[in-house]
Length: 593
Image (cartoon, rainbow, N blue to C red; front, side, top):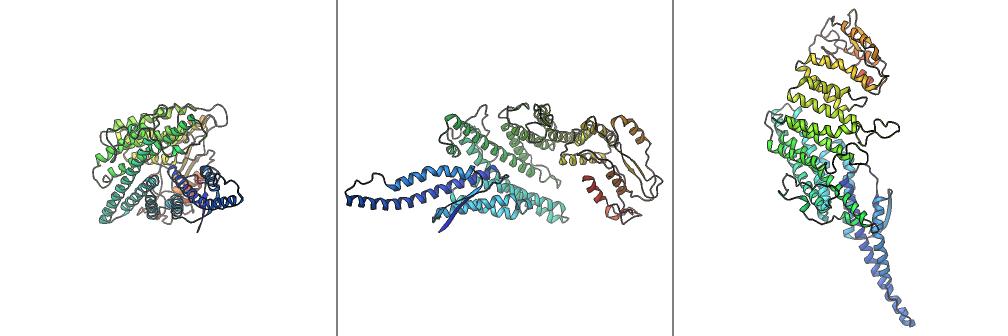
C-alpha cells in the first residue's frame, strides 16, 4: 500500500516544455487514480446495493432504481477534471489523495518524481557543469517516458539531451585549447565532434516532434503564415506544414473549460498553437547554433569550414526569422503586435549576420541581416509611454532598447573589421561602449574593447586616438546637461621622476577647451626601468569624484606594471610589485565598487 500525494511546486524558471510534461503526467496520474477509486467504489456500492435490495424485498418495499455505486462514480468523474485543474493552476500546496495500491499508479508516481528530479537537476546541478550526471538523469527519464508511452516527455528529453551534448562538446573544446599535447588535443577535438553530432541528432528528433504538434494544432490564427518544413534530416521536402494532419486538434485543446463559448475555444486553440510554434522556433535555432559549431569545428586547427553544414545552419536561422515575422512588425506601437517576438527576431538576425561574416563572399548578406535588425530596433527608440516615472526610456521590450542598440553597433563593428573598414569599425566600437547612455551591456563592452585592442595591434593608432578623444563628448551627451566628462585620466610615470603623476578630476562641458590644452602639454618621459607605476595610476583613478552609475576607465599603457608576477624578464627594479603597497587587483575591484 502506498500513500499518494500530489505536490504542486511553484518554480519560476521552469521551461514551457518541462511544465507541460509535468501537467500531462499529473493529468494522467489523476486519470489512473480516478479509475482505481471508481473500481473500488463500484465493488463496494454493488455490495451495498445488493444488501439494500434484499432488505427491501424482505419488507416488501420497492428496490432502488439507481445503484449508489453509480452515483459515487458519477460524482468522482465529475470532480476529477476540476481537481486536475486545481492541481495545475492554483496556489502551491499539497493534497493527500488516498491510500491506493496499483502498479500503474506506482509507475506514474515514479514518472512524476523522476520529472521533478530532472527539473531540480536542470535548475541547479547543470549550473555547476556536472554534465555527465545531467546526461545520466535525462537518459533515465527518457527510458521511463518511453516505457509509459509519453511521446511529449520523450520529445522534451530529446531536446534536453541535445543541450547536454552541446555543453559537453564545449567542455572538450576548452580542454583541447589548453592542452599542449598534440595527440591529446586531437582526441579531445574528435570527442567534441562526436558530442556535436549527438546534439544535432537529438535536436533533430525534438524538432520533428515539435513539427508534428504544430501541424496538429494549426488553426491558422489571424495573419498566420504556414509553417515551413525544416531543411534538416527528417523533414519532408515539398510538403507544406499546414497540409499535414489538417483539422486535427492537440490534446491540450481538449482541456479547455467546458463552460466557455466557441470564441474562447478558438482563442485558446490559437494560443496553444502559437506556443508550440515558438517551441519549434527555439529548437530550430538551437540546432542552427549546433550546426554552426559543427561546420566551423576544423577552422581552429587550420582546416576549412564544412559549407554544407553551414548552409544547413543558415537555412534554419532564416526559417526562425521568417517564423518570427508571423504577426508583422509592430513598429513599436503599444498593444499592436508582439514585442517578445521582435526581441527574438533581433537575436536571430544578429546571429545570422555573425554566421555570414565568417564565410567567404558573404559580406553583403551579413550587412543585410544587420539592416533588417535596424528596422526592428529603430521604431522602439522613438517609443514612449504617456507620463509616469521613466516614461521616456520605457518600451514594450523586456531588454532595454539601448542595450539592443549596443549589440547592433558591436555587430556592425565586427562586420566592418571583417570587410576591412577599420575606421568605421572604430567608430562603431566607440559608440557601442559609451555612445548610448548610462546602460551598458558588459558582454558588448568587453567585445568592443577587445575589438579596439586588436585594431590597435594592426597599427590603427591614429584612428584610435581620435576615437578616444570622442569618448568624453559622447559620454557627456549620454549624461545630460548636468553631466560631467572625464577631463584627464590620471597620468602616471614611474618612481624617481620629477613629476610622477598628473591628475585632473571630471570637467564640465564648458571646460572642454581647458582639458584639450592640458592634454596637449602632457609628454611621456623618465623611467629608470621598463615597467611603470600602473598601480599608482589606478589608485589616482579611485580617488576621482565618480557620480554616475557607470564607471568607465580606459588604461592606455606602453609598459607593464611593476612586479615579476605581471611580466617576464622586463628588468624590473621593483620585482615584488609596487613599493607603496598598491595592489592593481584590489584597486580594480575598488573602481567597480
